[in-house]
Each structure stands twice: as C-alpha cells, then as structure tokens.
Amino acid sequence: MEASGDGERLDGLAVVVTGGLGDIGLAIVSRLSRHGALVSAWDLLPADRGERVLAEHGVTAAYAQVDITDRGAIERELQQGDRLDVLFANAGISVSAPFLDITAEQWEEHMRTNLTGSFTAAQAAARAMVRRGQGGRVVFTGSWIEEVPWPEQAAYSASKAGVRMLARSMALELAPHRVLANVLSPGIVDAGMARRQRLADPQYAERAGSAIPLGAMQTAQQVAAVAHFLCSAGADYITGTVLLADGGASLHSRL
Image (cartoon, rainbow, N blue to C red; front, side, top):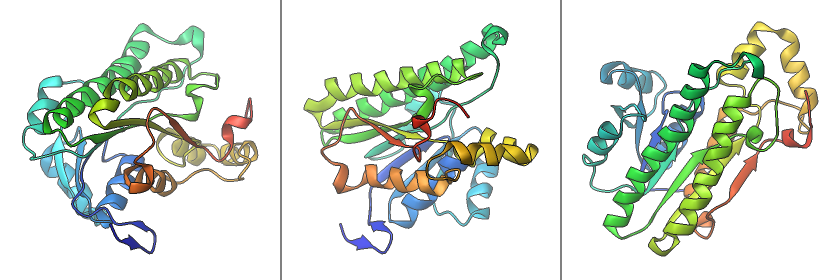
C-alpha cells in the first residue's frame, strides 16, 4: 500500500461501518473512503435518506438500512458483497440516568444494542471472514468509561465493558483464522450526547476540557484517524487489545 499525506492508502479494502451515519461513524466512513477503501455504511434510515446524508457530506460510500439487532438483516446484507475485510461494530446508544432511576427498558436497550447487537454483527462478519479463508479485522467502538466508573452511565459502561471482553474472546479463538479483534475506545467526543450537552450547557465544555489532560474535547475526525490506523498494515499484529484514545480522560476520576 502507498502512503498519502495523512495516512496509508487502503485501496480496495472492503469495510462495513455500523452506525455509519452517526457523527463518529460518518467520520470513519468518510476517512476510509477517501483513502481508497470500499466502504458500506449501515444505519437505520431508509435507503434514500441514508444515501442523501452521505451525498450531503460529500462521502463516496455505499449505504444499507440495517438494524444490528436483526441477525437476518445482517446476514442478508453480508451475502450481497463478494468479501469483507473489516467490520467496524460502531452502532450504539447512550442514555444518562442515575443508577437508582435506570429503568429495566433502558438497561435492556443498552445491552440489546451495544452488546448483543455488536456480538451479532461481529459473529456474522467473522463467519464470513473464516469462510473466505483470508482473515479479516473486527473493530468495536468502546469507551473510556468501559473501565472507569462514571456517574449516571452504569448501563452504558456495563455494555461497553462487555464489548471489551467480547473482543478479547474473539481475538483468542479467531487468531488461527487470522481474524483480528480489537476495541477503539474514544474519550469525551464532541459528538452525539456530549455535543448536545456542550450546546445546552456553556459550562459543560469548560468542565470537560479541564478534566481532559490534553485540554479539549475529542473530535470525531480524531477518532476516525485511529480507526484508519487499525485498518492499516501497521496494525496487522494487534489483536485482543483496547486502543484507548481518550486524551488522558481516564486519568481523572471525576469531571
């Protein structure tokens, strides 16, 4: 592979990104496609709306409406492609609630989407990779709070901690098949719920920034740069690990 000015070329690499229309997912889809990967973004929007979102952001990628909690939909979509080199199990949800107020429905939805959904997509992708016999990579989007207890995030943190062990278990069992499994764990990203908090509460960004040793919230593009590395030849001997790209946020115990 040849290198470009901002990272290794990924020409012809077949990649699927679940949650591909969210802030982080879209940044990953955009970066990988710019570097030559053949990317398919999966998300919940109908096909015409999903394709329109990609076009509006100037992203060249395929799109498919796939619910990661629907095994049949995942398997049908994977059968459409000739091969799959990398799966980014990125789709997920996060709802804040004090521990005593978490409802059974909130807990179950976090587990169903973040953990079981990731498992379902990863297992289907790994089976396809093993059948093809040329290896592959599965990258899960984790979180810095998968190992750091955080107020009002018990359900989310527990689901992401489960993803960490899922990846390690996959890495051990699938190593003979040359299927790598890793977790990319961002910090406080200026995206999704954290961005909404920043916009709604002017003091939030200041508090978050003061708790991050590098001094600023992470961008989705910074997360995508780490995702790019995990697709590259430089990561071909990395499996079963958590790449903690959090700006040092996990070094603090509280905001």
